[in-house]
Length: 80
Image (cartoon, rainbow, N blue to C red):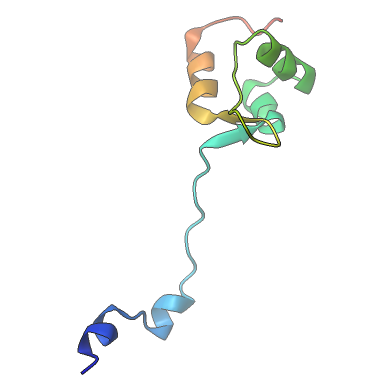
């Protein structure tokens, strides 16, 4: 009668397996500074100059990883 439910239900062994951590798609300002090898004020200056753009509408500034890595690969000097 409930054969469909039994086939899709997770077993206790499957539930006990640790889930792999999710990869984040953004960096905090601190993480961005660490990745770029610069200070926090430098990251804020890059944001002020609009060389890096944090995601809108968030309480804390989060910068997309793709954008940070694109900036690194652009070859622009980090002296701000």
